[in-house]
Length: 232
Image (cartoon, rainbow, N blue to C red):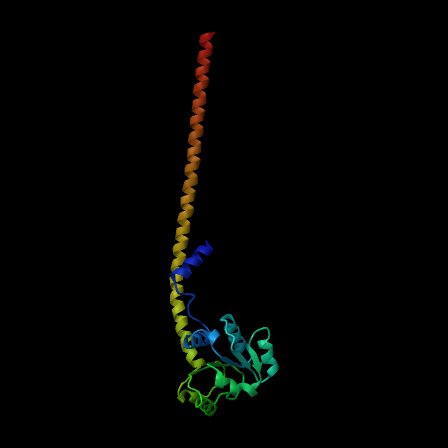
């Protein structure tokens, strides 16, 4: 019953679509912007919890051109261990941004990591667009980066709006799911009632058959008794 109801809910609603967390929205945004992530060069700045979430998502998507930069190199190497990802300290970060299609920054630094002047200098020598996803709080990327041509910057405020919209959509779909569950329960009760009626008819039929057998047996017995007395 539970499995059938689950399949019905997933098949007839969009409750599993969309992302609730801002981090998930950001990673989905990156995929929509760049296409298949396994073909892209991606820089993750920060090897904390959010950076690890981004790395796992990219690994699941088959991405291989991923570089993890962290202030402490050993932490970046630990996160990259067991994967094809590369790791280094902040000293190689600027060069990696030059080659990257996507930059995901999620450090715990109290200061800005990506400033307008640095990104503007990098973009002078490259024709490709750059997507920067700032998942840090406080922010890692200076908001003025948005003014640079060919650069798209999204931060947690932007993703918060997307996440809220997804939350509203999923709330609407959850109401549909409740209706489907009630409908499935009604169907289940109908099936149970039908089964009970079937068993009832089986019992009644068996009783009738037994009664008929008993009547037939008594009739034969009487007939045999009459025959016996006649012969005597």
